[in-house]
Image (cartoon, rainbow, N blue to C red):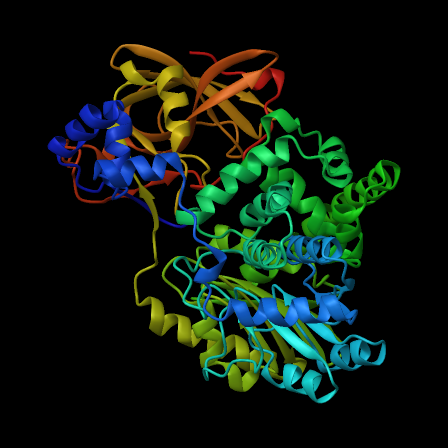
Length: 596
């Protein structure tokens, strides 16, 4: 198991007291804010309010994109929105198609399948030109498609690029109007492609005299993509996601309502977890196994009966995807065991589905604590998906090995590759060698960053609800991690066929119920002995009962406590027994109801 260490940042008491006095927050929330660099009351107030928003005009050059699009829309030209086959790609496509329809444009869409590969291809450019497209708008792709966009222009098409991915290493950009948060100097460069499309739609409606208020109805799509694309939940993303969750709860889109129905999601309780673990996988399923057109049609249809039919198809595809994923994972685990210890893994086989290997790569990274690239071989070529760990730039690793690759792209944490079968072993060796140099001799540890050090007297429903003011949670705004410096775990009781555990937590004379999901039926530390443990404090709702819930994150055996400093600003400490930081949430069942 990958090693884990606690990291407890400094927390000057005077800063906590100032937040308590000026914002009226508890000591616990004050600790969290200070340790998350939000100790200034004005900064903390703005973060908690989630009101950061920037105008579309903050994109340098967006006026050129708007002018070109409106010219073609008013002139009756055929406009094609070219998206991608994941949630962000189909949601950004849907927003642009809906907006252009409202402007009276002659608009259609194109979503490639995984066999065609990610992004804009030369073959697609020729196909669109032949069928009459005169303006091509890309969504969630094409910032690196310099040659393809040049070919499109030579074939008589105008092009507008909307994207958020990393540009080419050589610095070349497409010769076309671009709407891209990093390239265009936008005040916040962490937007997903759907948020970029939303901003472009705002600018289009504003310039044409359209009803910009209508766009608030598409914030449900922005929320879906913001969570699914795992962008940082800071700055404007917090604002868009909070507003988007409210829009999703009351959405009038038949497709989204049908999707929530088949996924068993209550619209009134929709949150980032429901998107990440119920809605997004189903929207992604068609693109992973077949074609993403079904997902796009679901988002655009106004027919409830058709929406229900598509939602059922996506639910079935998602179930099939999970079966395929389990098979590939077993095979990948066997390969990894045979290879032994490496600083980066390249795993490959015939018959692996290219639409599923990225998910499996994430699981393999969790198990090994190493970067993993999974390659689906087909004849003499292979297509792969890679996932990385904190501290290793996967895209940089692929650049270092590019002599062995046909194509590659992505970012630090996730990337895709195409290569010839004959170069597979050379690529695997080169990536492992690069990882060894980049990571150094010590195995990287998962860091458990502690937000507040408390005792059991404050861990109730009031604090659980107060901590929700920091939501939505996700990348760069993780769920709050609370440490009990002295606690005892006892009375373990298996649940969920032994996959999960509930137990009693005793701290400062207060007994509470705790849970551990996905880590088996045994406590990770000796029962009844004093330990340090970290938890997420959650609001659990079941059958109309609302209660707090302590979900175990990590526990430190008592043997490491003897030499550990007791103050709350101690140096990081090695953890010998732990559970993964981000164990997937499990839907509450009757036997999982945890009461204080």
